[in-house]
Amino acid sequence: MIIRRLVGVVLVVLVLLVVVDRVTWWAARRVVAERVQSEAGLAERPDVEVHGFPLLTQALGGKYDQVNAKVDDLSVQDGVTVDQLDVEMRGIHASLGDLVKHRVGDVPVDSAVADATVGYASIDRVVADNMPDDNLKVEFTEGDGGNLSITGTYESPLGSTQLQGEAGVTIKDGDLLLQLTQDSLADIDPLLRPQVKSLLNRSYHLPELPFGFTAQDVTVGQEGVTVRATTTEVQLS
Image: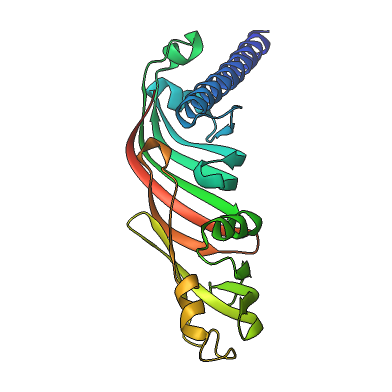
């Protein structure tokens, strides 16, 4: 009889712990989603996932190991659309009582990494809008060895010239730099090559990022170009 009662008490305690854990998970998701939405000026709350089980041990310590936020189809400045933005935050500080009672002030975050993927349709549009010569029309796709593949046409007094080449992509001082590879445009008329190269070897200023993010790296993939940015000691207000 005593053993049966003890088992019953243990089961009740376990159920309560699970309930508290899920309440904590929901409250942490809500707070982070609200703060990211407000700071980034989003029309809708992002999808947020709080990692770790049980969360209760993290909540009691007032620090969450990892929280991820995801936003799709984010419109930023200069007509750029970020198809997918993934943010991974580490070391999120918020007390359990404040979370549950929804009275959280600023939420300190130790560090964060953001991956912003811009699709090729958006890249083509931005390049076309900023191209100083309307005679050059190009499109971008994934190339070899981490490069961008470039195809297009250039209209000149010599006629219509088909273009095909590749360009490397790097980040420097907040700009996205496109630099044609050495063998690119080898098949076009030598008289046109310097002009076309000067039009394609260009820099594009990246939109200002929230939370003090600084662009660090860029990769080329099947879906588009992904810029990785990092920040430390963030305040989610």
